[in-house]
Image: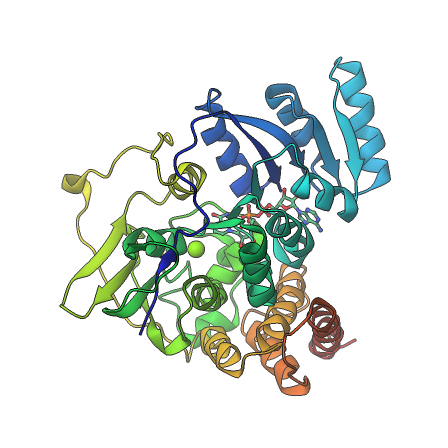
Length: 409
Ligand code: NDP
Ligand code: MG
């Protein structure tokens, strides 16, 4: 097996102040990123912020970080934010909609784009950043799952650098050998992708049948947005991360082993032919991978305290259970099928998670929605964007039908 953290697009340390577009600034990753940026005003300035619905939160961020541009979801929200900015004497250009997101992601005035919009809504702006040679801090794993080949090819063509923010992928990046000019390095046996197991790790099938939204949202170690929190409870998050790792590190699903590690201290590992295992460890705080992805190959402070090993009572490991959490198996299968299968899996899952959050399907039906959608869908080569977007749309339609049947509509 071969894998490498491709450093080909890096031209060396850059200590000049860089400007940052933060897409999804009102979210969990968005707030963690702002916390890190605020610690380094000499290195980073904010060029653009984006939110979808949380306009008051975005306004507060605008007052503190003074971006040149703020992007929101609708014209109405833009008018609201514009009025608030005028009242406060802030000179910020307020835009709205997907084209405005693409524009701030590809603007010549920005060096770094943090892709932290949740779900497929983040795809086009992430692609725009990859097409225009930015350093892309990729949190939005759904974009990579849907169209990994296109995204990575776009980055290759433009010289963009994709830096993984997802803690596991950032850990793998740190644990792989750094190679020159993208030359792959042999001697890697396996990528060990760790998983906390989520809040329902110990539940029996019977208990899972009646799990409430509140129980599923309650992650033991991480504080995250609702979609990824539900994905963590079903282990779909780990399934999406398997696909994400295959894309980022050019490996196959059989090169990846998921290891449940409830303490979330080891964020992932790489196992080598000589018996060495290299792991990245740290507190479960997204500011660490964000700071790493911002400053690599340098290191900057993140506000996260180092681990105190004297406080850690033990590190535990177990096999994931795909009987109780079948979405992990379905994700492995989708990656093996290739083509548009991961995009279909992702779209069906987004519909299923929305339906679970609004009470239309039960916890165990989440995997049924995804499996039935995959079974009813034709898988095509994911060779161009319109095929992928078509597969996404079609899968959403099918998934909504399955949800409708479960909800008795
Ligand atoms: P949140 O739900 O906390 O935040 C999502 C952000 O996206 C918000 O700023 C939201 O705006 C914005 N947004 C939502 N829908 C749209 C849309 N249709 N168009 C434009 N913007 C939109 O999510 P997280 O921060 O938890 O996650 C963001 C991404 O990072 C996800 O892909 C997730 O998988 C990934 N990730 C998250 C981790 C975490 O610890 N949270 C860890 C690893 C990866 P608003 O709130 O104003 O409506
Ligand atoms: Mg993760």
